[in-house]
Image 1 (cartoon, rainbow, N blue to C red):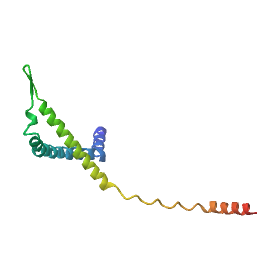
Image 2: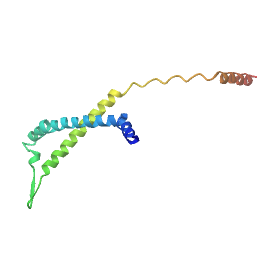
Image 3: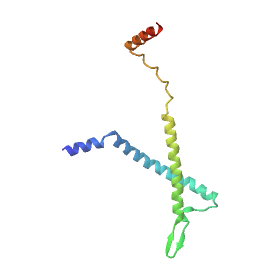
Image 4: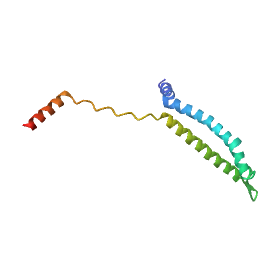
Length: 126
């Protein structure tokens, strides 16, 4: 019974739940960015490069086909996804940033300390 209780406490901790939500949202965001790259960006890049389709690029080496076009496509996908995540994190950090608060004035020293300072000053003046 103790193992079940420990597992329940672990599974409902805030960090585990937050991580699970982040993974799910990250997966959905990844699909959006993948669609953006595959359906919008890469066709435009292909037009700019004269109609080249990266995924079809390949070299025959003997009986093997080295499909470096798929690798190039994956690298471009990664760069665009990394850029999109960078911009999203930058936006989130900007929204979270608060105005710097003025530092509070130092607390007044204790009454005993004030009295001792006054005595010291009186003794110095004599």
